[in-house]
Amino acid sequence: MVTTNVMGAGGARAAGIDGTATGGAAGCGVAIAVPLGEDDAATLARGFAALADPVRLRLVSLLAAAPAGEVCVCDVVGPLGRSQPTVSHHLKVLGEAGLVHGDRRGKWVWYSLDTGRLAQLGASVTEIGAAPA
Image 1 (cartoon, rainbow, N blue to C red):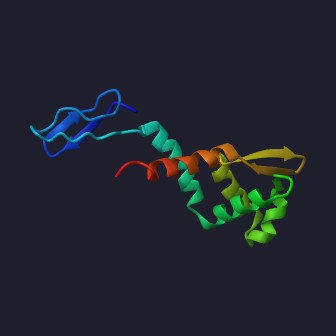
Image 2 (cartoon, rainbow, N blue to C red; image 1 turned 180 degrees about the vertical axis):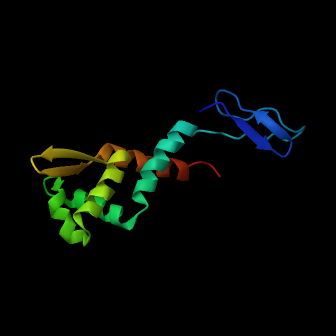
C-alpha cells in the first residue's frame, strides 16, 4: 500500500500509510485502498504496452513455443512475414520492457523470454481482477 491523495466530492483527502483514505466529507465513510503505486503502475504499463502489438504478441508466442527456449532472430523473420529490421525493432521494444533477453552469438542474436517478467504481468492482472468491487 502507498500514501497518496484521493480526490472525492468533498475535496482532497489524504490516504494513510496503508493506502486507506482518511478524512473527507462529513458522513462519507468511504475507504479507498490504493495498492498499486505509481512506479509499479509505470513498470507494468511498459510491459503491457509492449505486448499491445500483434507482431510482438506473435514473437512472444514463437519464443514460448521454441523447443530450446530460445530462437535466433534469423529464424523468426520468415514465420512473421516481416523484414529483419522490423523484427529486430519489435524485439528491441520487448527487450526494453524486460520481456525478452538477447544473446549475441557472432553475427546473430538469440532471444529468450523472461518468464518471470511475463508471470509478473499475469499475476498483476489476476490480482487486480480479484480486488473487491
